[in-house]
Length: 228
Image (cartoon, rainbow, N blue to C red; front, side, top):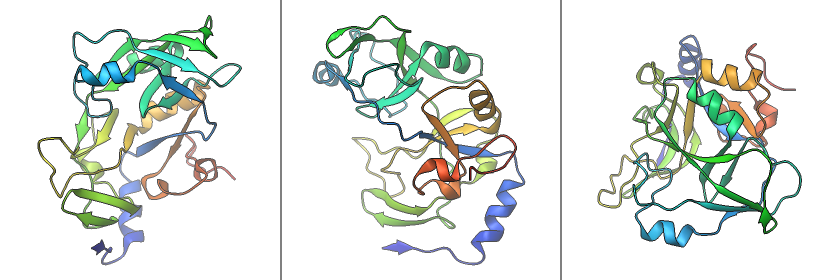
């Protein structure tokens, strides 16, 4: 069943932008071919990336092989895992966020990688801020999918710098209210710091632009202007 916005969505969005802004974290579009080579072992030990749950204490070091040549981005995905460079890790660690970092064993094209270190960033905060009334999406018994227009209740996001939009679907609880897709959000303050630091691989967009491609065409910038 399609849920469509009632009233004046433009006015709703303008009102939200007057508040302290929440932005969507997206990759820059430069694809990094990287594979977690021991993912099957990790999965067998209860590893649940993107679920905002702690990393199992008995988890071995994660092994990552990068097939793309040259210097990798400061941020990229592998198996939907959030991979960050040491530079980005240090920047994130300067904010009051709940994130576990695990250093990776990295190879590039099968050979030991001797560049900067990379880490898996396990974000632990989930904020249930999805605006069911003003977003446009498909509702199913197993949760929300096919989001065509994303609207967040930003009043619920204040005080959080880095989080996943919830409710997150759980193996034991498939709530119709849960969001089947992964949406990462950051505060305007953190986005500004990342942007100004020259971190590569990351693009920030406003919630209403979350499903537009390519992200660079609607990228948010600290001065409030979109990319041309």
